[in-house]
Length: 105
Image (cartoon, rainbow, N blue to C red):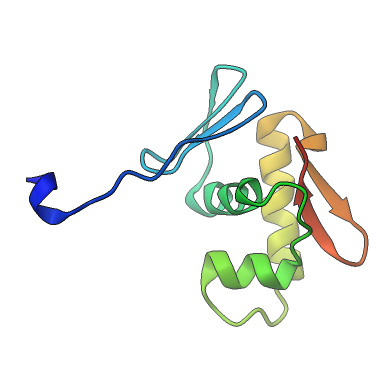
């Protein structure tokens, strides 16, 4: 049935000891599963796809929420804080003051 629907598997992303499987919506860090809410997963997945790139809160919001990014800074900040807390490694996502956020391997 899946072959008839022409569904393609999205590649698993490996960055150091962090693994993201976008097809199954799973995240593991050092072999341990991390539970994320859908928007947290989407933000992390976006950042991990562009390691080292600084993405503004507006860019993140538009890509993940697919809406105009008016007043989005606090929403993105809160999601980033939750991701950092759940990963127990705040250094993976760095804040670039006045610019945005970047994923660092």
